[in-house]
Length: 147
Image (cartoon, rainbow, N blue to C red):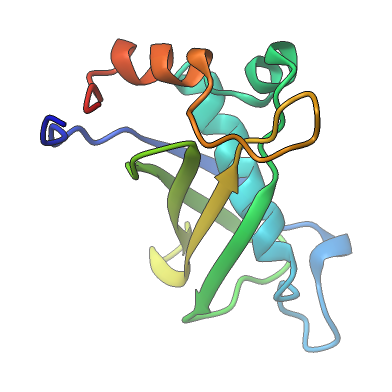
């Protein structure tokens, strides 16, 4: 196995904080950050074609989230804009990992950091031990050739 190259693939998107995401303390509810991370993954997939949700669905292979981690640092409030930095994190095998940094646009304050892991499931609903071909092709396209 070759040592993975140091390739940084990241996307930055902005999402307005909506009333439906606010809790009783007038802050973005903690669960809203999971949605912001998903917004980040969607934007990442548009920025780096071949790994977006439409690509995954078209392949017939699913990639459910199996782990979500979030650490909160500061609040987002109604009408704030969340700036979501989504970064691909390489791990060998049939998995897809991202890290996130969520900041408040008005003052660049760090609000949260997170990680997600997705595993690939085949059309038979069984966990894949080898990465799908479209994922291997995507890694190759962006210089993440490591196996």
